[in-house]
Image (cartoon, rainbow, N blue to C red; front, side, top):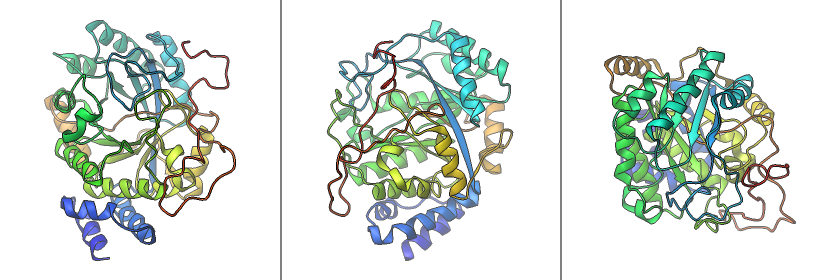
Length: 399
C-alpha cells in the first residue's frame, strides 16, 4: 500500500504524518490489518528493537474521588463495587512495589485518586518514593496524582520522582462529554508543569468511549504537540455502575489499528499498551507487541489484569525480550534531549506511566456462557466479563 510505505518512511525519519493519513490507518480493512501491523512494526523496531519495558502499579489511594469522569469506576457517584481505601503507608507501598520489581518491572507507578494532591499529599508521596528507592535504587518512579498546582511538580522531582503521568484521554472538543469537573486545558497545563520541572512527561488516551476516528486522531495529534516521552493507550473497561457501562465499541482488530496509528504519529515515543488490553485485544495481544514497546504487569487500578507470568510467557513466545534494568528506554536522541532538559529544569526527562498492576493474578477475561457468533468487525461482549480487584477474595469492596 502506498499509504503504508509513506508512513513507514515518515516514521523512520520522525516526520509527522498528515491527519488524513492517520485517519486512513483507522479506516483500513481487516484484510489489510497484518500489513498495517507489519508496517508500524518496522517503525517500532527502528527506535526500540524488540525490547518490551515492564511497569507496575501501586494504587496509593483508591476510590473516594470528587471528579465526575464518566469512564472511571472511582468517580463521584460511581456504583461500581471497587476497593476503596485512603493512603497506603510508605512501607506498605514499598512492599507492593517490590512484587513488581521482582517480576521484572523497571518502573513503579504511584497512583492516587482525587482531583489533585494537597501539600501534605506531596509529603506522603515523597516519603513513599524514599521508601521504594531505599530498597530499589535503580527503579524509576512515576507519580500520577491528578492536577498539579504551584510548585508541586518541582517538589516531586526533588523527592526523587522520575516522571509524572496525566492523560489527555480524549479530544479537546469532546472532553466536556466525559467530564464536567475539570477541562481539557487543565490536563494540558498539568503535563506542561511536569515538563517544566524536569519530570518525564507521560500522557495518553482512552479509546472506546464512543468517540469517532476523527476524535482519536485529534487527541493523538494533541499528544504529539505536547511531546511526552510516553503515551499509554488505554481501552475503556466498561464498569457496571458508571455512565459508560454499556460502551462496548471496540474489536481486537480496531484496537490494533489504533495502536498502529499512535505509533505512526509518535514514532520514537514509548507507546504503552495499557488498561483494557486483556478485555479487548484478547488472543491478539501478542500482535500488539509489534506496535507498543511497553506494557503493564498484572492488575490495574480497580480491575484484575492478566497473570504476570502469562505476560512474560507472551513476550517470550512472540519473539520479544524484557527490557533489562539499566537500559535506557528512549532512543538516544530523545534520551540526550531529555537529560539536557532535566538539567535545565524544563522539558521531559525519561519514560512513562498509566494504569498498571501486579504479577501472578487470575486472568481478567473469562468465558461468559456460550459464545454467540458475531458479524466480522462487530464488538463481542459475550466473551468477556470485567473482574474487579478483590473479586474472589475475602477483601470487601471498601477494604
